[in-house]
Image (cartoon, rainbow, N blue to C red; front, side, top):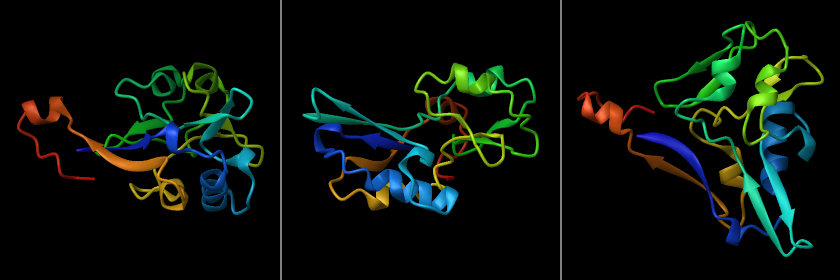
Length: 150
């Protein structure tokens, strides 16, 4: 089973608590701009669209990285090896959701790492707009490989 963060935009109030939790965990400070997720405020703030990394099956960010700094874990989570990243920013341009950033402090690419399958944004969301869900990986099931390893 592959973990992912399911978004329920109809439950999102746009409060930004998820962004604060993410920024605190990853950047040791409460700053929504340093969060690894976005909230798009639509229709004069009538509704809000949380946007999270999809950890794509065929990730563009990983495919275009010239330094091969990306890795897809057995769980399906796509992570960046900061030791290999050269900070060129090509992955930033190719992320379809706009969720890969170059850190101002390290000058390396950063993105959601699912907090080791225990996302802080999900735990912090007071309305349930973000939830940890699991999808079956049909390829791994077809091969007979066990799918309960997160």
